[in-house]
Image 1: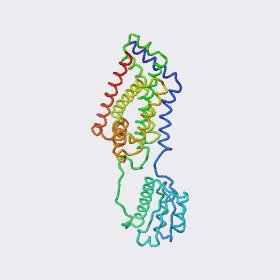
Image 2: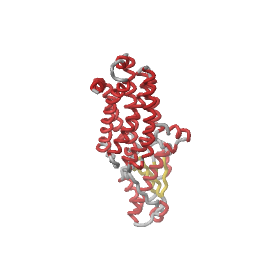
Image 3: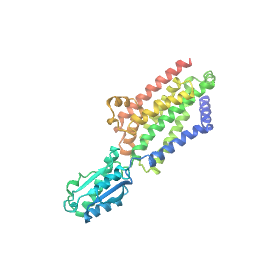
Image 4: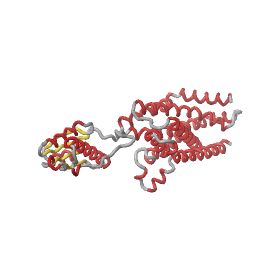
Length: 361
């Protein structure tokens, strides 16, 4: 046991001495959290909105003032719909709201002209504008607002519609997988390149204990990075942890072990550090971003890509974290994701260790 602890301390010192590794381990999570939390967002804000008013009655004025008062829209007034459409075509506006002459009497004469080059954002802009106008009319008239009236809706779990609620669990899944798998694979391949792996194998410690000793520091670092991410999400990004912190840590620990096992498998395949980095980036980064549900719903993908997505571990971790962190459900609601992660971890660990032993012999 003393020799095992000395190997762990040795590996930890190697990690702490490498400034580039420390920068990747702790710099990348902070930068990505800030980018996805503040810069890369799909929240609706400052939509360039053109308002067309043939006549400014009291209800039209109330609706326009309500639009201007919200943080979602930046208002410009033009006299005719043709002018509004020209502004949209010239990329000087995103949305136009055209009020009819009889808007005050019928309370239903409003048309939306929207830039549809981005269909998802166009739908959001229209829905936000419609909701603001409907609310202003309800407050002004205290009765039904005709064709503009919509079914009363209530947003659960994310009433302010902040994109950080969606991105934080996704960033956790991507970062933990990349850092654990990439760093573990590069660390073991580095020993092979330098020829020190053979020296370690002839030591009294069994090969399995050597591999465990190299993995333990990255396990501890991953837990520290997880704590940083959770702390930043709760304080900087204002994303609440609705579920039990204990179960979040347990599921994350299973996922970290899965990522470490995947890194060990990559180290068996790669012969150089460059190849290890390339395999980690190509095999892990692109599928995680594109097919795990991080940015695009899995249900909207073609059937064949949904089947491919079914073998990507981050998909299940991200789903579990969204349920535990945002929805605040219990562990019984994520048992399917947990079972899949445990099964993948066991499979990767067995294959990695078996292949590693065969190659070392």
